[in-house]
Amino acid sequence: MNSVQARLRIYAEHRPALVDYAAPIVGSRDNAEDVVQEAYFRFVPTRPPLLLGLRTPVGYLYRIVRNIAIDWTRRDAAEKRRDAAYALTRDPLPLAPSAEDELICNDEARIVLAALAELPEKKRRAYEMSVFGELSSAAIAQQLEVSRATAHRLVQEAMLHVMRAVERIGMKDDDHAA
Image (cartoon, rainbow, N blue to C red):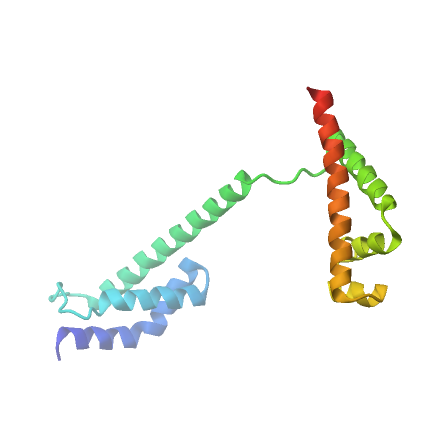
C-alpha cells in the first residue's frame, strides 16, 4: 500500500472523531465539517507527499485539523471585527432629527402641500396614489377611470409641478443667502 492510500485510510477511519474534535474550536459541526474537509486536502495530497516517513500520521492529521480550526476561528473573529468597524464608519441616521432638520422638513412639506393644492383634482389624486399609496399606474388608472398612459402622464406632470415648486423656493433661499 502506498503512502497516499495509507493516508486516505487513516483519514476515513478518523473523520468522525476529527469532526468532533474540531466542532468545539470552530463553534459548530457544519464549520467543523468544512475544516476536516480542508484537512483532507492537506493530509492526502494528490501528488507524492513530501513527508513520507511520518511516525505518527494520526497525530499529524489531528495537528492539521487543529491548526486549520484555529485559523478558521481567527479569520471568523477578524471578519466580525471588520464588519463591526465598517458598520460604525457608515453614516448612521441620527436617533432624533435636529431642530434645523425639522424646520427644513416642515418647510418642504408646506411647499409640497401648497403645490399639490394648485393641481387639478385628478392630477393631485394620481400623485397622492403614486407617492403616498405606492400604487402602480394600472391601479391608479383603474381608480381614476382613465387609461394607464393617462394615469402615468398625470403622475409625471404632478411630480414635475411639485419639483418645480420646491426648486423655486430653493432658489429664493439661495438668493437670500447671497
